[in-house]
Image 1 (cartoon, rainbow, N blue to C red):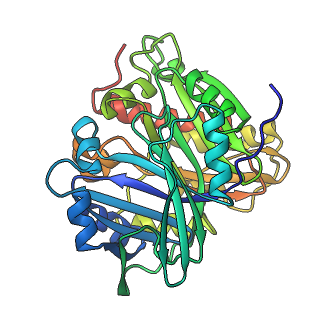
Image 2 (image 1 turned 135 degrees about the horizontal axis):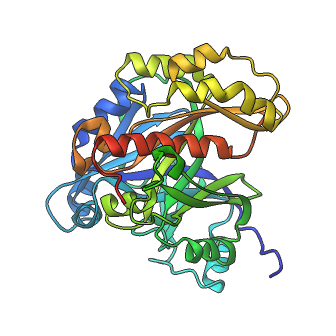
Length: 385
């Protein structure tokens, strides 16, 4: 297949998170992660949409959380089927007419026609499509001076909450889990025009020792070269399909969907230290990871890093890379169910990442993440053959 014409995406503008408890979300974003709460849905929008929406922002990361108000709204319909989760990903685009035309020609499924909204500053044009990402939709937005993030949004006179002292910058990538990912990969290639960026597969049966259980995955990262937007896509891998973390996510989420979103930060060391001090809990990393780290970095060609390994170990930050002196640092928050101590909060989680020259996805850290999740699931009695 010849290379498709680019849709003209600019960036991931926002993610829309459907939740059962806005107060719980406010505590995470404002109190623990130092996001600012900038505004909310107007009374009219809240009533007509049957959901209360609040915008949290840090850097270029806009996270809209919506809680059902009564029955019948989008949040209510989503949460009847799933625990808390990402229901919409919004992309800023250069030309909404072009995006609609190309997606329609390629077999995309628009939910609505292009809608146009105006304010004193300009116009906003938008439409949404269905996706293979479970009940997550994609929204495309062309913004020409229009100020509100979404129609019916009302900004507070003064921002509430935090001031982004952890220096969160933008959404680095989105990761989704599927019981079978090939349809999603084909859709991203043939409809969205994305290209394959990175692949890996492995199994953690050696973590168990007796090889009676483990968690495997196959992962393919797709990207839009024009904007750099990246989607990582995972599916379970034999021999312990049912015990795979991907399959467990699917059972907990009650379907395919977005597993995590990565937040890029300017300096991960003070960011993670500060978040920990504010009560954020992260996935555990065993000491053996850091004992083996020097040899692994030498093997993959990263012969020098600026951070002392002892400091990375203290904060449980992972390091990986593919080229000399080009690497990335990352860490994964516990999933929402673990953070809140409530299964209904769902299996979604955030990643915090700092790239120091490396643009890829280190296979070593994919494995380290899976081993950490495996230990968590064993502790909760979930991981079994």
